[in-house]
Amino acid sequence: MCGIIGYTGKKEAGRIMLDALELLEYRGYDSAGIALSDENGGRTRVAKCAGRVKDLRSLCAEKDVSGHCGIGHTRWATHGGVCDSNAHPHQFGAVTVIHNGIIENYRELIEKYELDGKLLSQTDSEVAAAVLSRFYQGDPYAAIRKTVLKLRGTFAFAVLFEDIPGKIFAVRNVSPIVAASTEDGAILASDVAAIVPFTTQYFVVPELHVVCLSGDGIEMYDLSGDRAQIEWMTVDWDITRSDKGGYPFYMEKEIMEQPRVIEETVRPRVKDGRPDFSAEGIGDDVLVSCRRICVIACGTAMHAGLVGKSLIQAIIGIHVDVVMASEFMYNDPVVDENTLVIAISQSGETIDTLEALKFARKCGSPSISIVNVKGASIARASEHVIYTHAGPEIAVASTKAYTTQLAVLYLLAARMAIARNLWDEEQTERYMSELLRVPDVMEEVLARKEEIHHIADTILNARDVFMIGRGLDYSILLEGSLKLKEVSYIHSEAYASGELKHGTIALITSQTPVIAVVTQEKLKSKELSNIKEVQSRGAKVILLIKGKEVLEQEKIWSRIFRLPVMEDEFMVMPASIVLQLIAYFVSLDKGLDVDKPRNLAKVVTVE
Ligand code: M6R
Image (tube, rainbow, N blue to C red; front, side, top):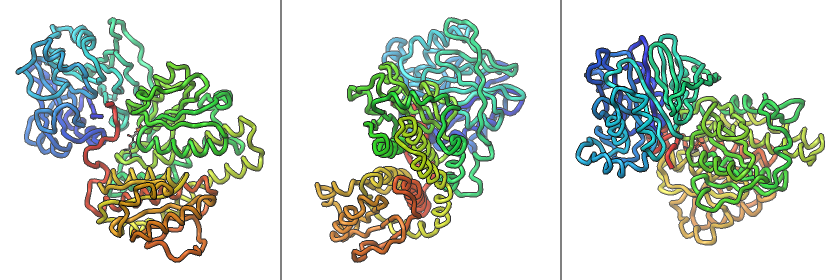
């Protein structure tokens, strides 16, 4: 978590950093700060405060933040509460530091370097600044090398040395840093979103390499002091896609973009009516040889994995585990060369997913990652990568990343079926034409946005909401429930409807709205019976059901949304949009900060 920016060049660094921090704010928004190098080698100037970047802007309006070289930070608090003194940058002696990550041995370092009583904050980051300051005797590379060797944990640091004006030094371990040359200088950031306004050419700073940015360009050295080659990459995000496009919040804009980004994710991977991953270098051998699949992911990405599991088990008939990446290492994972590991991550930086993937690779597992951000750590750590073409997802609540992850899983399942000779022409044609129809069906649902808004009104004042369904319906409700909790702060639980009677139904009263999803023909009659059960306990039921069929049972719903008809396995797509919009409208109508829910950050780079 935490957003990092650094700029040196001919322009005003303060303005550039504040704008960039706004783009990076989704990584954390507990506090923000900037530091500007003094061009005459005087004291580095710092402005920082608890709160959002807009608060920092107001503070900067009262301070001298002129200068052409600086570093900036937006924080998601880990060590030390949310207050001005814990905001970054941290100054110690001649060094000024911003940090993303966690220094696990910070207590030992305080003791070893007798820092007790000398620190102004409760952060692990200031401890690192103090150690760096102690080692700094005029050679920044030597000081950084020595410091890094003393640290245990994850870090991305950007550093200003008072007596080296105009230069920014940076180093990282696990936590990401990307850097780029601009037309008049150089820039670095925790992710590409902040550098896209300047250039499309960038590189990912390799782990444990020290980069130095100056007005003359960028130099990079490894920890032995040898000059290292920079591997440039091209970002293909369109900058105009990073604004709100007239919507009040990114979440709404990103929900509305889904038909287009699904199209952009699927179309290029369909050749002669069949899914094709040759551009990704994924041959059929990888898909045919595995005996089982293990999906590792967190949050929404894990929920996408659950849908993938149902699809692959149903179509291919091999066992698929979906493991919460944050739990993977603690359950003695059984993965080997016969287990295809699929890591799913929008950001490609979620540390739990990254660590789980690295572990699986050490066990000999072949791996494919499904990632949205090009060149991200998870993409680089896996054998193969399939990029979702969702474009920048800025709202903390993931929407379009989820459905593009699903789209890739639909393609993968089909390619596996073809590679394993499980399908004839007709089956392939039927499945693929349904997949290609998804964007149009999504448009149909989006056109009924106001209808969904009215449905959302019915749960606006609820304290608890239950969501019930079976099979695939249950999987998408897990995601729908996460979405509602995340942006509306309403407690909600997705429950497999057959499980309710094993205890949870005790919580159902007339005050507990229940959202029920019924899209799977083979499960319908059981699902409808389960709905009757909650209705009999007084619950008001919001029913999302496939098609226009007249239900024979007496009316069991307070509200009904009839979903456009697709083959059962594709109903996830239209149903997800309805659930996303319900969460969005509840948050909007409660007057909450939809894009930046409390306590959260978009990218989770701490374990
Ligand atoms: O970047 P990732 O896809 O790896 O992120 C995983 C989760 O942190 C993420 O999906 C989170 O659950 C979302 N905020 C949910 O909307």
